[in-house]
Length: 99
Image (cartoon, rainbow, N blue to C red; front, side, top):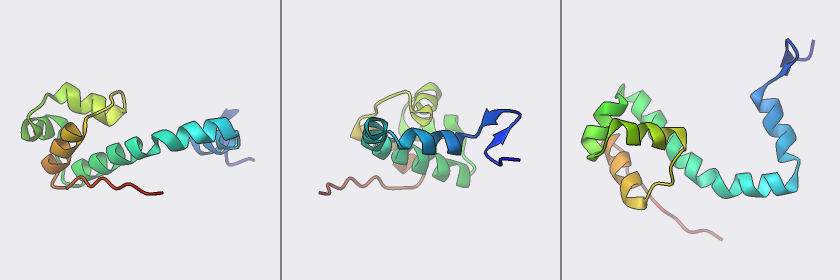
């Protein structure tokens, strides 16, 4: 049995691999990857510390719903917002330009 398919459903990993074979899709995916890296890092830090979205919101001076939108990737946060959220989970946001 194919490990990537169960009950005729393809796994996320297999779907992602297939989609990334398309150059246009891969270019767009790579363009938004830094945003998702920030979200993933904040979410991982929050969960590691056992904090709720409400606790992070209070510490960052925002609302729980704003944190939920941020974690879901449904917003394009400002650097200020991302920095406040990072501090709220005990981290520091660093921005770096590379070539």
